[in-house]
Length: 83
Image (tube, rainbow, N blue to C red; front, side, top):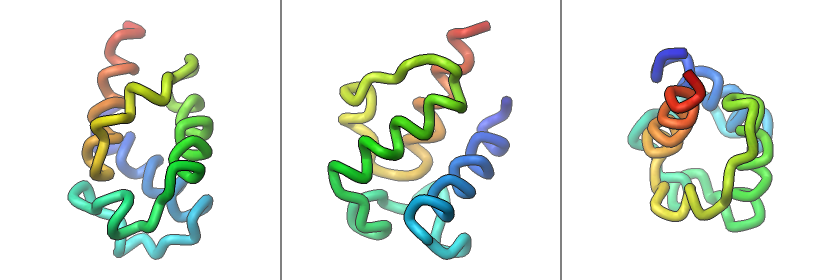
């Protein structure tokens, strides 16, 4: 899966879970400041992202994640490691 495909799927998840308008979600969108995602929301998001990689993801892998693009990069890395 390409980073663009991951981004589109992630955008759909963010829209569904957090009722965020799609135009508000870009690669540069800051998760905490712009989307108002708190720590509990972040855990919910990580659980939903398991479907992207088909394996368990650890919360500490997302400690440095600040933007939607950062999430895309982490997911892409996980998916590349599976190959």
